[in-house]
Length: 371
Image (tube, rainbow, N blue to C red):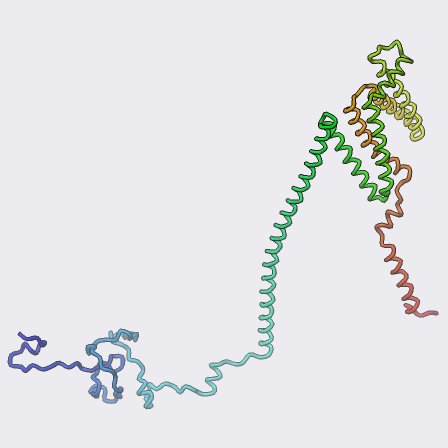
């Protein structure tokens, strides 16, 4: 048995070679052999030569995207050849009529429409820039807030550190010099009060020279008190005075009784005089009472033998208390110049210059007719 297809199996037939038939795809020629006029389409034009293909006669190309009709076949494409020869399927000319071109392109916008479109575009552009600026400004403000918060935190830390140093130094000096932390707390507090009063008086225009003089007087008072108490000079003095005037009193309390009684009487007299001058009878009574109490306490303090350390601590305390007292006496004696204080906050030179300028303008350019 020889190979050759179905014709080779027939007895008595001559073997013949098979030649592929050149056919065009169905989309172009409907499967009709190239070079032959189809009998069923006598008026159809023959498409020019196409490359040969081994595709079967009834096959469809893979790229044929032509939809199928209801009968199952393919919908034929427009016959461009027939249209080119003047048939009914011919395409309209590319140019078309002028009316159709104008309708297709549309009418050109007018000047008002163009101005409106331009204005809208400019507004959108400005709005976009504004939104961008707002966004960036928000980021900048966030950074500013962050930096400000960190700066405030750093400033607060520095202030707390300064307070700790000041308080620590005061406590250390109180313990090291006077034997107690309480002296450090007392001295630091009184010193800060004096600094605050001095700052207020400087702001009111009292003058730094006078405040410095009051500080010098306070230092002198503190030194005198410290030396007197530290060397027990007051105790020795009251002991001698007690031995002279109160020999019947016990020796251990004799200086205390003499000192407290004597200074209480002196304080009461001074209080009566001062109170009577300022507030009459009621003022005299209150002044005498307060003077007696203050004199008695001072007598007790000066009658006791304190020793060098405690005496020095009391002297420092007396000096720190004397400084604000001297500043108060200075203010009471000299007062505060209210006019000078007001002049510091009023631009007098500018006001005077403005008045002179107005008068000069009025003299040269009268505002109304002169009669």
